[in-house]
Length: 331
Image (tube, rainbow, N blue to C red; front, side, top):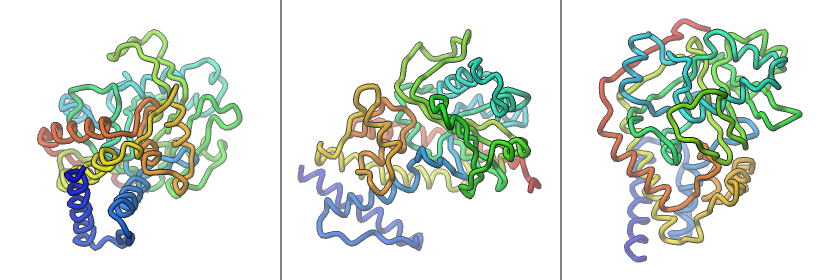
């Protein structure tokens, strides 16, 4: 216990020093105790990238892929080079999109057509996707994707009977479906969020059959609305190192006091409750859950240790720097 407390103190100093050296406009909140100070730092970090179900809008996305997939992207001159789902969330999204109940839906028709069928799933931070229970061992390469300023995000919640489809611009303004259809060429991403996991009919995929409670992801679907993407470029390793410091603090926080942890619950009930909750009402564990993509992932020491191990394993494997600007000139 003393060793964990010492680690907490050290990590707080490291993170606080990092913020100071970067002249960050926010300061670490004053605290009367180690526990309160740790909680404040973790909430500040987790809140910044926690995905809220109400309005999932972001300008930068991250994905883990394989070196061979990057080679293919360079060969085809397109990050979104394949019509074949490249991941489990992409399979779930495609399976639901092809459901016949959407046959008369105008947005579904757009997303089923043409190049919108070339997709890749991504997430709005670079570490939480590594907490997924199912992931390719070969996905060791981190890619950062920046969206064009005029990009639109389609939110697709297939179980929501009244509001299955909503659309936002990057400022968080909602658009009517009619206006979104007029700007269909600017649709960049589909935020897919479901409590059911329907796979694409007739497609076995590369993953074993599974029934995961709750799945959500940002599905990139329009190369023209990607302002730029980079791999193994300056700054990405610094980003990983920064996230690693916070993750070490989070792991120590969970280890110090098991009561800080939270389990997903039956059918992911607790995780999905955290997804829907307002950020300012969440505990640290719930904010951690708001960063996850699957409802089955617990917020605890073991899960965060697995993420740390993957970052340490994958970080040194970044090869062949790439920087592309597919939508340069788009306004």
